[in-house]
Picture: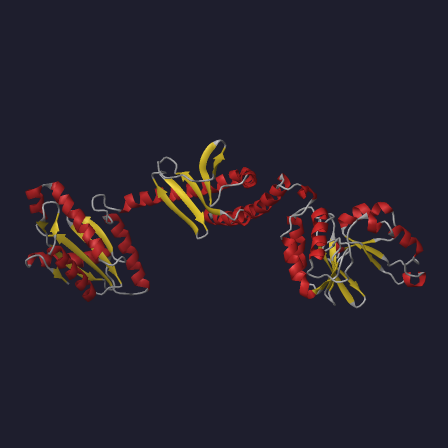
Length: 498
């Protein structure tokens, strides 16, 4: 005990937790210390709620009310909040000048022989582990505290019980403690419900953070796979299967170490060898199913862990899946409606209405930023004769095959549209009339040298090409190409005129 003269210099009494074994002595200490009106008991508000019942005369300095810092002479102390390690308001104290951490109960050790400095001996770590297993409520709580301490980068750790830890041993000790399963409930050899709850709680926090931040179901699913695999290393893949509304199609999400893939299929044959599956329901309506695949048979504890986890996340996962399904279904329907509205039913190239709107947009682009824009109108020569000779079904077959040739033989940036009857229009952005002529001449030769329809008939085409010029209207542009087509037909057909 300090002498009375020395006691008067004590300005701050730091109480890192409320353990009565430690704090109970302050009543005596206060009675023998000379009075100072600026003396303070430094602690956290949660600890103060218990310590105030001692009815000390010394006022409190609450670290949470003072930005977790305290200026003491030429030093600044910083306080690291480590709740429930092992008291609710527990904290550690860091001397910023020397980077010495006074770690309270964390890093405490129980051993038969005292060592001033910690080492890597089995005796030291046995005592370290024994202390933390009994005093720390859970692995999650201990790891939270250890991470906060790591971020502070101390150079020396002085625990309340046990040996001082030098800088070269700090990372090693922390890494060992992070792997420790702790809590009084671990007296049993098997994993208890509390241990499993601890694991699920860690995943739940991360899962709900993802669900709040991400609208992307695939990202949520990929992260969930990683979280589960951290606790279940044998996990190989997860399948999430859902059925599209009002259809027989199923949407399958597959997630594994490589990432997430999805596909639409009309059959679920071959779905077997899974370890466990869970229903995803909203108001008793099934939205989908989750299938878990592992490399090894699940232990009872692992199965219990998964059951506990999916009992908590099935509903929010179902909601996220339903949103994704609805969005994809609406997109699917929208695309199908768009296809119907813009495509020619027979040939499946664009229709006249789409062509009209597309040309308008290209002409507007040209007005703001001129670039070569060409257009071709082509016509099947003597198409009426094909219909008269073979019938309209064969004629339709010829039109469909011709449209396919055009799509396959031209760059994807070109737009092919059925203009009417046996006429097609090809819009060629960023293409001048000379290059357009080369494309169309190549098309003419391909068509001339192949057989069409089940009747193996020969077909030829005639085509007219125009390049857009300043001041042209849409009608002028089409009319210019149509004039060239007329010349091609009048001069013997099976020709391209520019």
